[in-house]
Length: 568
Image (cartoon, rainbow, N blue to C red; front, side, top):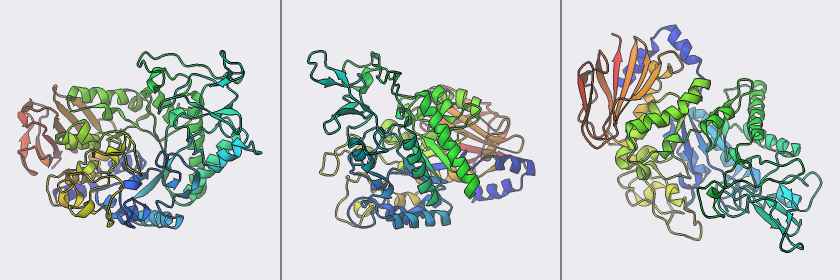
């Protein structure tokens, strides 16, 4: 109730504040949510999540304040890499449903005001893709659709050919595989079943623009671009490929870490391609109207490179080059570690571009509860949702889901399965994920405690904390982050982290997080009396309590609070 009253009060603020807030595009402070479709909701009882299941849960996304959700791939695929090996970029895989199901989902999302973003996988296709099969046969227009090479003459046996370079794939082993039918090697930065497309070929670029346009015409609001750094590789003028130097990080020549990837990652041509796609989306908007269609770029790259992916002052690229820095923190990380991690992004990206985003987790990394411990899930959710910019939440992180031990099955045998287990909706059978007898991956053993239905009824649950944070994002102080003195952050001590969001002299929110396991205190951090408006489960305070910040404030181990001051 108090948050609702505060929101009404904020709407009465001066027109200058409203104008400043309106200058912020929707994606800049958005609450984004990743859905792994196989694991979100099953609608037909086969134990695998699908599009109709997602549609049935869209009201939940609205309930928890999500601006937009991006879906891991739902396109036709042999599922060698669970959808990241696409055989048809403009069709839905029957596992997930039909195009009619997809259109119904988009229509309902628009009714609810939730935007839909799709995973765009441009670096490669499946080896079952029609394009690759045509390229093997050298059919007209597809001869150089992929990266092919004769290879080198084997120094030991001149009658044989060896790989064109020493490049090692992300999944291990050579990036080059011999195709007996075509009598050439083809490049694959990932699995050998995922051949790399050749973006030096204008026809490839045109085909992929047509893919983007196809889904935009069906109503999607943007794309998360997979594996951005790998799109281009270095090629010598004579058509050969240079070897990569040793990194010194591994003794295994078949490991991706064995080389320093100066020729197969973050090539400038990749940056230029992002600029081309951004221009395409902007032209689409000019032609068709509507709000900004966005590009999220998955790139585990240096912040200096991410800055180039965003733009160079003349050209614009990805709206949100995804910031994975906080995913490297662990249970022993301190407030000073948190500050350093945030600074790594802000000192370049905010200084140069006034943009920020914070990723909690994804389908390729351990969940927060496993990386940092269950007792720190709320702390991280509070931090990423009160820092300036956009937050990205992986499904289930809002209820504190953890990794689930898995064994190889006939369906899956992937080291990343533990963080891809089914969403926990209820304390009932199969956690409410499916009405069928089984699930494609096992349900967590603690699902009766960590599930949406139960957490809705617990005042300080992770779910209700996240919902309260989304309400705060609509206040004038949180919308003011691009204005002078609109935010600050710092480590007040080794374990206490502070974030401030403000409309100076009108409204101020102060976030205090104790990341340590001991009682901490800070003093004289403000000259005003603040009110508690959000408290974590480890807090001894209640909403509505008052505290004079000119004095001393104590924080229990792992306690996080949000305090508010408003001009009266």
